[in-house]
Length: 110
Length: 116
Image 1 (cartoon, one colour):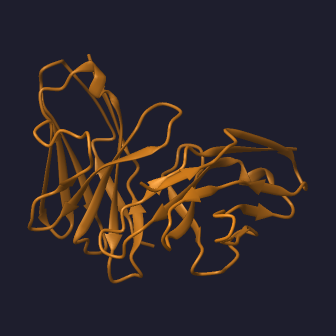
Image 2: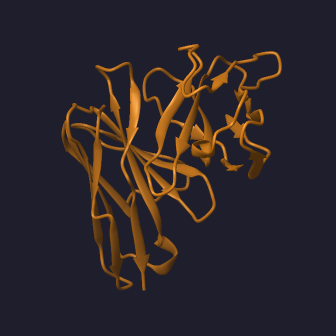
């Protein structure tokens, strides 16, 4: 079965520092990868997806099929980036059910 | 953007009673909705896929007679927790797939269920 691994439960950085939230997946096929973000007291929302190849709020993520990774990066963290980040994948184009990683809490300190 | 609502946001019930949670897509049609469960400090676990006009698809280990799902219209899915027990206490989150909008899933705010 497919699996998404986020090794860090908590990542604490100072404002202006680079950020990298790690995500690895296990699946032999070609999944679609996503990053979702949940700000305090808000619902889960899509941050970005690998097929879009875009930068959202300064975040980027590149799918590395060789390393089966989809790490989320931002060169200069802002305090408003503090949130819970979930990496997720979907396998099939039919149901589009998501498999989530355990999440990483990002704390950006002033 | 597309909005998904859930009602109620919080419910407390006695053990043995049934609780219904509604999930609505407010400005788009959703042929498919998903129900997730989230334990404290843990990730979202898919419980079932709700299909409009047909039976729900349950994930392994999820009791279909315990968690009844009805998707009677293109904008509403309901999850009924039957004969609730304290171990059913959790955060239940639904999402709806906007098939006309690139298949993106939009999440509801969640429902906190506490069974006494």
